[in-house]
Amino acid sequence: MDRLQTLEAFVAVADAGSFAAAAQQLRVAKSVVTARVQQLEEYVGAPLLHRTTRSVKLTELGQAYVKDCAELLSRSTALLDDMRKTQNSPEGKLRIHALPGFVLGHLAVELQEFQLLHPGINLDLFVSDTVIDPVKEGFDCTLQIFSPASEELVAQKMFPVRRVFCASPAYLSEHGTPDNPRDLREHRLGLYSGYQTRDRWDFFRDQEVISIHLKPPLLTNSVHLLAEYGCANAGVVCIPTLVASPFLVSGELVPLLTDWQLSSFWLSAIYPHTSRRGLKLQLFINHLMKKFAGTPPWDQVLIERGWLTKESVLLV
Image 1 (cartoon, rainbow, N blue to C red):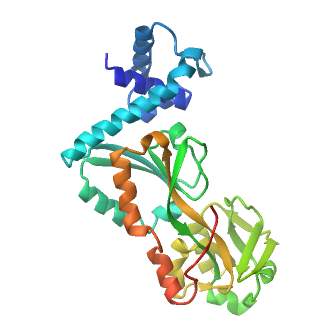
Image 2 (cartoon, one colour; image 1 turned 60 degrees about the vertical axis):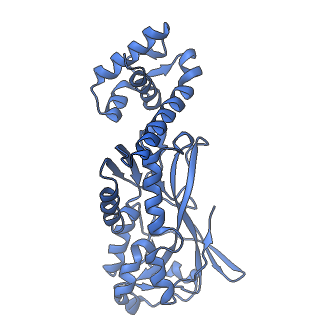
């Protein structure tokens, strides 16, 4: 019996809430997960999970020790990573969940460089803007702009995600250019649906703050669709600068209300406390930090053209 594998199976089932989901995360057959958990229960001499046809729940003993088991697995992974580090050969799989707004258009080259530096690390990258708990979903890390889903997670800030209102020259020629945030109410808008502030938008200029509620005819969870919507002369859109920058530089979109600022979010690497010493994960995060920390390149070009200020209003 491989005790680490049995612990891994037990923790995976506890986190996922089912043997099938745990098997999918571990990339093994469901029967293998079942057998490993049974081996652990036989060794302990007591059941760790209550099984029904509809659910899997921890027994009292399982609840008492599942966190310790997870931390033991994490420490063993970190130890093995440190041992590999001394040989300069980190290996294994790294499962990352990331926002499409950051991944598309920015990450492919950095992934290639990372893999050239660390050929033994296999990346499993899932792209979605859903806010997740990486522990429960079986990821080593998630790259997202919102707060961690639980207190068990660490948020390592990487760079600010700034936003800009913009529209195509053709749309502005026909409908006029808004000079004040309140003018946005007179325009056809396309906005991102996932912000926690919902319909309330705050605009900052020196000591002045304007708060307005906007009801757009288009709400979507795709910032790339919003960029295309703006380029199609369909209306005024608000999109992150990491998506908007190339369209603004090319002239396909025109920045609006540039003397006003919107609040910015931090894009953070979010991962479990127990993964802090994981070599593979830290190598990956450090690689991204070297490329994007501080003022990212897509913001720098907009600052140089006077469309953004150097400082941003950051949400914690």
